[in-house]
Structure formats: C-alpha cells, structure tokens
Image (cartoon, rainbow, N blue to C red; front, side):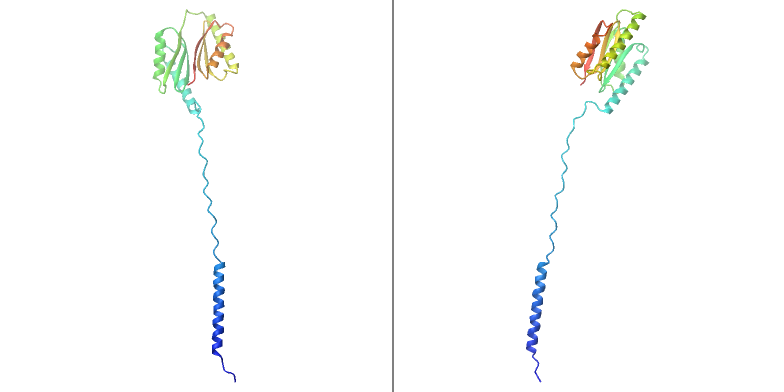
Length: 209
C-alpha cells in the first residue's frame, strides 16, 4: 500500500493559488475604466452689434402727430386766431407755425398758444402778415394755386416724401415744413415757381435735425 504525499499536495495547491493571483492581477490592469470624454468648451455668443437708430421712431412720429393735433385744437379754441389759416407741423417736439394773419399781435398769440401745449419743446415762427384785402375771386385763385402746388410737389420724385405745406395769399405761395437736405428745398422752390399763377414764393422750409 502506497503512502500519501502531503508535501506534494501542498506544493500543487500553492502553485494553483499563485497562478490564480497572477491572472486576477492581470485582468484588473487591462480593465481600466474608460476615460471620460473631453469637455466641450461652452459656446460663446457673438458680441451684440449696435444698429444705427433712425432719426425718428414710430413712437416719436405718433407723438408728433398728437402734438400737431393738440396745437391745432388750441388755436381753433382761441377766438382771435381760429379764423386764420395757420399751418402746423411738428418734428421731434419742435412745432412750426406758418400761414398768414392780420397783425403782429395775432402772431404773438399763436406762438404763445403753441408754447403752452404740453409736450411742445420749441416753436418756429413762419407766420407772415397779410397784405391788402383780397377779393373772393382772388381767394378762389389762391386756392387753385395751392392745389396745383401741392399736386406738383407730390408728383416730384425728389421731394414727394418730404413734409411740405403750401399756403397761397394773393399769388404768393409760402412753403413750410421739414425736409432732409438743401437739395429738396431748392427743388421745392423750383417746382413751385413753375406753377401758373404763382407770383412769388416765400421759403420757410427747415432742415430736419
């Protein structure tokens, strides 16, 4: 009967344990955790570009229209001025009065009334004094001339977009309002002088600020 060999069994067991230890160590090295993806830098928005601001906004145009209406209403409420043909234009709170009246006191009264309207920044006086009394026939002729002048100004490509008012007194046409440049003023005067029945032109046009 053969004797058992406990020493050989222990050696075999130790060898097996060593092999398993080496194997497990190798596995732990090869299975390293995957590196996290590189962080993407945050997107930076492009710098804001300042766009040029128009000389007037829609809100400003509405405010100017309201001021014009309020000034006209105030002039009509005054018994000494309401019967006169006074034109009113407004640009950025600046009110221009034009037309014809009988006396300097009426000009002063119209200016004071316009200044008193809330929201009015300043008032430009382009009001002229009337000359000799005119007849009914002359009034009709003046109305026709005014209509012709307005139609001609509206038909001209260089100035049809400008804010120009025309008033006629005994053949004298007064132009008032706000335009973009001197070229539009010159063209408006040229067009008006070419209208039949116009004896002279009074230039009260102002350049826009």
